[in-house]
Structures are given as C-alpha cells and as structure tokens.
Length: 261
Ligand SMILES: Nc1ncnc2c1ncn2[C@@H]1O[C@H](COP(=O)(O)OP(=O)(O)OP(=O)(O)O)[C@@H](O)[C@H]1O
Ligand SMILES: [Mg+2]
Image 1: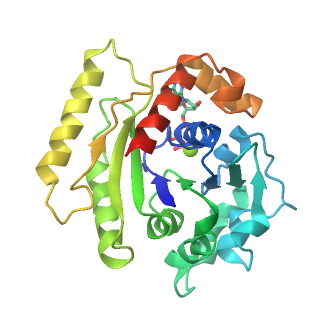
Image 2 (image 1 turned 90 degrees about the horizontal axis):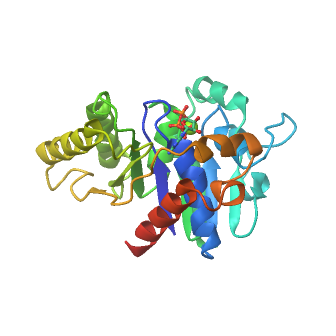
C-alpha cells in the first residue's frame, strides 16, 4: 500500500481537488483506494457527494473514539472508499490535548487496514496542528500541491521543517515525494518563474538526510480549468462531471505518472 498525505498549510492551493480527483483517477484504473478527509471543512466528503451528518460516524470518531476505519468508511463508486469528515473534527485539536500518543492514533488504525488498499490518500487541512501531525505520522509520502503564485514559497520552509521533525521523531519513513502544480497557467511568465524558484529552494536546502532529498516535481501540471471548480457543487469527481475536460485529462495523466513511480 502506498500512503500519501496531500499537504500544504496554505489554503486554497488545490489539495482537496487533487486528493479527490487523483483518488477517482486511480480507482478507475482498478486500484483500490481509500481517501481520508482529515479537514473539518469536509470539502473532500462533500466533493464526492456525501453529506456530513451528525449521526453519521466520521474521522472524528476514529481520532477521538473507539471507531476503526471500516466502521466509518463509505463506498463511493468502484474501488473507492472515503472516510468522511465533519465540522466536529475542529474540536479534536482541543479534545486530544493530554491524550498520550495523540499523534499516532491514525497511524495505528490505518495499519489495521493496510492490506485492503493499493493507495491511501489523506486530504489535510490548511494547518500544521494535531490533525496534520496524525497524517504525517501515518503515511510514507507527502505530495505538496502548489499554486504558481508569487507567495508560493511563503511558508515552505516551515512546512519542510515540520516534515523534517516528524521524520526524525515519529516516522522515519516519511518523504516529500512530489510537488504538483495546480491551477497552472502556462501562458504566464510568473508560473515558470515560481517553478524555478521552488526547484532552487528545494535544491538549496537539500541534504541526503532530509525527507526532500529525492523530491521530484511532477511533469504533469494541473491547468486552471473551470470544470474542476464546478464539480464539487455537483458532488462528483471530474470524471463524472466533465470527463472530456482538461481537468479530467490532467488528473488522469498525473495518476499515470504516479503509478509509474
Ligand atoms: N485546476 C483548477 N482550476 C480551477 N479551479 C481549481 C483548480 N483546482 C482547484 N480549484 C478550485 O480552487 C479552490 C481551492 O481548491 P481546493 O479546495 O482544492 O484547495 P485546498 O488546498 O484543498 O483548500 P483548503 O486549504 O481550503 O482545504 C476550489 O474552489 C477549487 O474548486
Ligand atoms: Mg481542502
């Protein structure tokens, strides 16, 4: 099983869009996928047409209670299961204070189902709190979605520092394996400049011992595509909502690139 957290503490860079559509693209190729929505905003849950209801158990019950992942996951089409989120998850941060081993709850529960899936994706919230630490302790890989924006580098060193600390203290398998550019506009010079700045930044801070020693930038760029922004309100992945769009083509190509690694 490959386990991948999709993380950037910056908001609105394409984490959820990538988590949902990459999951759907790989599921369509016959891979067994588990998508865990670890964001109290529950955007991935909504994107796949599930409605976060209070009576429905969610990832909140997995982190703060006795629920195991199979107790809460729901099927979303062939080969894709999702562990939904709920706004209650926002309280987990506080509720888990004082709980021994609070950073590794998800890791231990995920280990119990590792043989059931080919890929697990975790859609992280835009923060570096206890929820994100649970994701980083549980996975082997991080994908970093970036929007080629003049602030793309802002916060990147804090993010790398967090990944580095987790790799030293909680999870020595953790690697930043890939950078994926989202909402890419190939016609702008800014986009190309940001890509080269990020490459230089990673290169400059890279040491063999760092979790980004072998980070690669995916060749596939996810172009800005209005269909990708529309799909969530229909509760559908891009492959159901607009299978012939650029967005569908880009996520399909990204899935191929990831599967080939
Ligand atoms: N390639 C794209 N083209 C057009 N719109 C996009 C694209 N990718 C994402 N969006 C839109 O941009 C917004 C932010 O994307 P998304 O929700 O995936 O980001 P996020 O990083 O998960 O945000 P948050 O930090 O709030 O969780 C959404 O409205 C989404 O539909
Ligand atoms: Mg999101």
